[in-house]
Length: 140
Image (cartoon, rainbow, N blue to C red; front, side, top):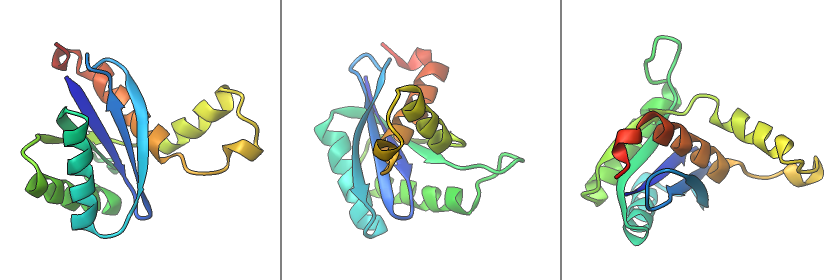
């Protein structure tokens, strides 16, 4: 069962995909943000092209577990995706995924110069791996 993860941002949307067994997450691509419905259509198309049976949307939460401003934006984006596809869409807490992506680049020994750039698809992969690790029953 392949799962597509979406790390929505105001400028870019990071995407990651699981392997067919739903065990390992891999960065997929980064889409530039244009408009909610166009972005949702692009995500739905990628989900179908990659035979995803679930879409996991990163949602930021505050200290009380409530969606932040960006988390509410992710909620509206999820609704737009649901309107584009019949693939189930769920939320997963995306807190600290960007920081973890930065730390991963450092741990991999990537030079400071080459660490510049977007972390969106790596952050989506970290988000997805967290989901996969917490939901082993989702794997066949």
